[in-house]
Image 1 (tube, rainbow, N blue to C red):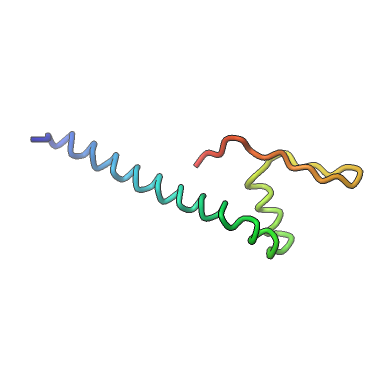
Image 2: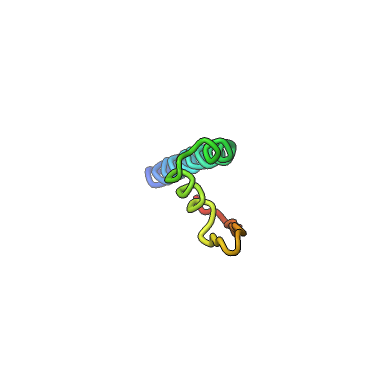
Length: 74
């Protein structure tokens, strides 16, 4: 039989698992629809999407470059 502390620990783990899967679901939903959001979005929305996916965006000599994040943290 599990002790009170073990039950609390397992409840904490269960809560963290649920939070992780909720955040992962949001992230996957965003990535599935990012192109549509970007193509239909206004300037402010497009800028926000670019900020989400990159912190290194340059425009020089008519060349637009976006260095994508390699590691996303949820």
